[in-house]
Image (cartoon, rainbow, N blue to C red):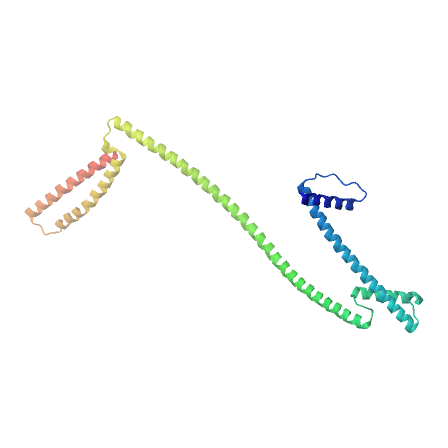
Length: 278
């Protein structure tokens, strides 16, 4: 509790310092706002302390520079009885340019021994900067080349994507059409199946022989083809008998047997054909 009150007091003092004679804006006093403002006050205090140290350092350096300048001026007056106030306008400009150059080059004085290393360092920095710029230009050219290739590739990919989408749309339309046809055929097939079943039921109700149904006729057709195949060797056998030397009695018997067998098969075949035609 005491720590919280101490923070609130520190915050109030900091706000009074910040706003001075101006009124402090109203704010809700609670642990959260107090903690935030206390944190800001601490950071502000640290920043003020750092700024104060920097200012003091700059003041000290300025004092040192002023002392050094006064010393050099006194030395110049003692040696050659020369004062900057005695310079002409051109001389003053040259002196100011020399001072500005020393400041820009960050030399400790304006002697030639200080200027030459500073200029050499500046020249080296210039060469390094130029070299770095050349590297950056090469890298930039490489990136531009890669970017161009990437853009061309992206364009090709977009065109291929459009073609693929068009082809996919066409194929989808074909598939939809085939599905519609398939569904139509399924419906028609079911209708035909129902029609055939109804027709068979009607024919059965009217006393139609079951042997004349579609399945029976298909079976009879297959049987007919089988019988035709069976007659082929019998005909060849009959032809072989016809090629033998005639023995009137025996040949006549064999011929009659073969004719009777052939007649039986042909009669059965004719019957089956007639039934199929019905």
